[in-house]
Image 1 (cartoon, helix red, strand yellow):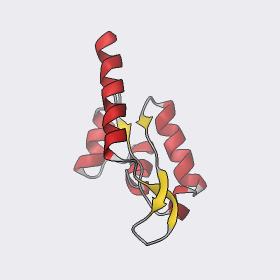
Image 2 (cartoon, one colour):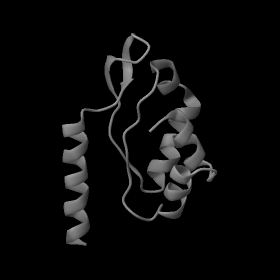
Image 3 (cartoon, helix red, strand yellow):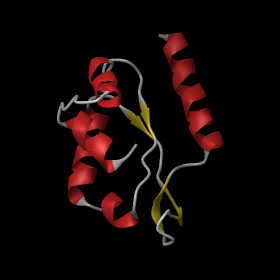
Amino acid sequence: ATANIIGKVANGICDDLLSATFCVCWQKPILLAPAMNGNMWNNPVVQRNLKTLKEMGFNSIGPTKGRLADGTIAEGRMSEPKDILERIEKIAKNIKRQ
């Protein structure tokens, strides 16, 4: 998830298909995998928006530290797909138990 989509959804902005889907399905299990520039990730506004989504029940994984698109090494790299899949499976198992 980009800083943009995290901000839109946290503030109820649904002006494209992705943000509208998140806004409609907010009561369903949603897993965010943030990925962005390290400075963006550390921005207090981004952190506040992510906290808002977590308080609403959204799940989140990562980001991790690694090489980013801009060539820097920082926290902001998307979690590995295998780790994301493992989290999805864990969330799905909890749904089946409810």
